[in-house]
Length: 409
Image (cartoon, rainbow, N blue to C red; front, top):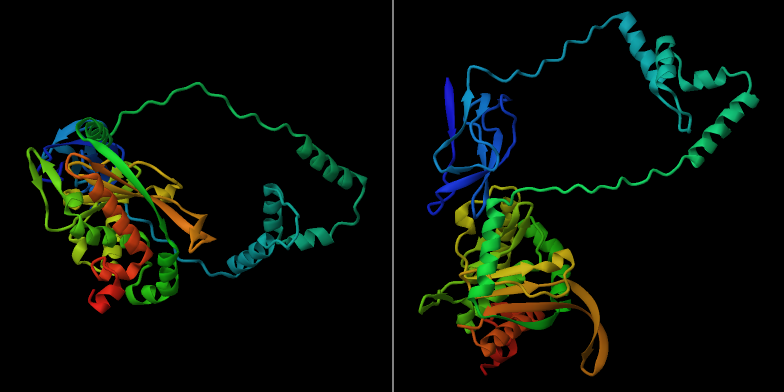
C-alpha cells in the first residue's frame, strides 16, 4: 500500500511552507513516527513524521515552497524495516572457555606506557600471552632497543607542524523562510516606527541573594531551578498596570490597550530568533512563569513549538546577557510598542550611602515607539522594573513599598 504524506497546517494564517531539510534519503526505509523532514514557515520550523513504516519516495526538494495539504512524499508499506538480528546463543565448550580466558589475559594491559601493535596483540591472543608474559620473557635490553626509543622520540619532536590550509572558497545557501520573514519585519520596524531607547542600571545583588538562599528549596518544591528571566517577566507584568501604554499597540488610528500582559520571551535557535509567549503573566506566580519559559524555550529549540505558542504577545523581553552583551538597543517586535533588553551582569564600583562598593550590576534598555509612548512613561516603566528587581517583595504588592502599605500611607 502507498501512503501519501502531506504538509500539515502550521496555523490558520499560513497557506504555504518551505521544505527545509530532509532527514532521510530518497529510497530509505523508515519506521512509523520517525522524523523524516523539517518544514519552515514564516513563523516556525515544524517536523514531518512518517505515518507508516516503509520505503520513502521524496516528491519535493529542499528549498521548494509547497502549499499546505500537498503531498511531499509517499511511503510504500510493502517494504518493512529489517528487524535487528538477535545475537546468537553463546557456545559453551571447554575450548571456547579457554579461548575467552586467554583473550582476557592478553588484552588486559598493566598501568604503564607500553604500546602494543595490532600484529603483536593478535599474536599474544593466539598464544595466550599477556603483556607481563612478554616483558618477563625478554632476556635483556640492548643498544638496539634503546636507540629505537630515542629515534622515535626525536622523530616525533622534529616532525614539522602542519600548516593550516588556506581557502578562498565561498559558501552560499538560501535564507530560510523564517529568517527572510524576520529580516523583513526588522527593516519595517526601523522604517515605520519612531523608535527610541532609554537605559537604566539595576543592582542585582538583592535578587541574587534571594535566589541563592532559596534555590535548593525551590528545586525540592518545584523540580527545577529558578532563573532571572521569570522575575523580570513578573516585574514587567506588574509595571504594565501602572504604565498601560507600554503594553498597548497601534492599529491604524486606534490605540489598542489589552487588559492582560502576554510577555514574549526571545529565544535564539539554530533556525533563527523565535518569541514564544507567556500568556497572562500578571496572574502567574514566579514558579509558574519559570516552568512555562523553560517548556516553551525547549520546544522552540527542538522544533516542537506550535504557531499558536508563537502568536500574539503584548510585550517582549530579550536577554543578550547570556551571550555576554553589556549594552544594546533591542528592536521592537511588531505590532508591539516596546521591548525590554537585559544584559550581562558585571561587578562594578558604585556609590551606596556615600561609600564606594562593588555590586553586580546589569544595564537594561527599553526600546519603545514614541508615537504612542511618551518619554515620561518609558522612563517611569523602566524605573519601576528597577525598583522591583532591587526590592523583589514589591512584585507582590503591585510594585508599591511594603512599609508604606503596612502603614496605610
